[in-house]
Amino acid sequence: MRMKLLNIYLFFFFMFFPCSRSCNSNDKTTLLKIKKSLNNPQILNSWDPQTNCCTNWTGVACTHRRITGLTISAGDVVGEIAEEIGDLTDLVILDWSSLSRLRGTIPHSITKLKNLVYLRFRITELSGPVPEYISELQNVTFLDLSFNRFNGSIPGSISQMPKLETIQLSHNKLTGSIPESFGSFVGKVPKLYLGEIPKSLSKTDFNTLSLSGNNFNGEASMFFGHNKTTLRLDLSRNNFHFDLSKLKLAKSLVSLDISHNRVFGELPLELTNLRLDHFNISFNRLCGSIPQGGLLQNFEVYEFSNNLCLCGAPLKRC
Ligand SMILES: *[C@@H]1O[C@H](CO)[C@@H](O)[C@H](O)[C@H]1NC(C)=O
Ligand SMILES: *[C@@H]1O[C@H](CO)[C@@H](O)[C@H](O)[C@H]1NC(C)=O
Ligand SMILES: *[C@@H]1O[C@H](CO)[C@@H](O)[C@H](O)[C@H]1NC(C)=O
Ligand SMILES: *[C@@H]1O[C@H](CO)[C@@H](O)[C@H](O)[C@H]1NC(C)=O
Ligand SMILES: *[C@@H]1O[C@H](CO)[C@@H](O)[C@H](O)[C@H]1NC(C)=O
Image (tube, rainbow, N blue to C red; front, side, top):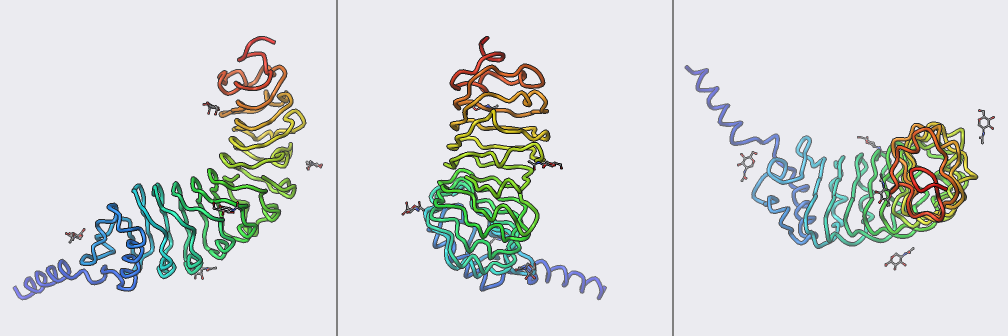
């Protein structure tokens, strides 16, 4: 009987005082400052000072009462990233996306987040440069700053991030060239989704490379070459200007998108030897007859359209 009472007592104790899961009070104060700097948006209505920020606040994850994950997405947020974000020093995942009017720059205080592994600011109105100091986040493996308004050139320091596996920088207003240092990453070569390009890149063998939707210019011959093992290459929607007939294609290539550039010349015969699952050369200045054979004729007219004078199947006879 006694035992039973004790059990019941313990049951209620843990039911009403889940002390191990309550939120660190400094973290809570910091989150409230972040909320304020976003002008208390509707999507953060659950961030009520009276409740437990670990169990009751949308997008907040904790480990041992400290905030380790902060995911804020899909909302009309008018504001900036609070400087105080740097006080959430246990953060591992920082993922903010589809925040229509999130403005301003990435604050320097972000460099205090030494445990950060996953960093994403995607589809916002953040602007300014991609800061050089982002590289101080030495534990980051995934970096996504795509679909924002970042301008200027890509900081070379990114190549000094030892654990980086993926960099996503497409759809910004980035200009200039890809830094020389991208020819030699300190870690393994990450998947790169960016946007121009130094010669040293020819030493780097990317498995997946996407520079789509920026305004990179110049030639892109460093991404091509017989000896590369590149699988997917997406240079679409830039300002690339090169002679396609002069380039050697990697035998490994399964996806090639150079649409919406100023690429000229003829299509190399080697294209018929590739096991392509995606191919798009539309909106360029290509000319000449389309090589017949392989998988090339499996693609539609749209993938070849709007060039200077291409002919042959799937387009009109030459
Ligand atoms: C907080 O979350 C717990 C568990 O999810 C729930 O039972 C409780 O009602 C919530 N409290 C408030 C004030 O929303
Ligand atoms: C990476 O994180 C670990 C703990 O997760 C930490 O001990 C280490 O200092 C961090 N490394 C760097 C370079 O900040
Ligand atoms: C980036 O944009 C800002 C604001 O529009 C402008 O002042 C700045 O000169 C731009 N920087 C570069 C490098 O284009
Ligand atoms: C490609 O590899 C072969 C043999 O591994 C080498 O002889 C040749 O110089 C390489 N070509 C280029 C352009 O690096
Ligand atoms: C190829 O690019 C054109 C122009 O951007 C686009 O209309 C078409 O849908 C693309 N095809 C594929 C398969 O992505």
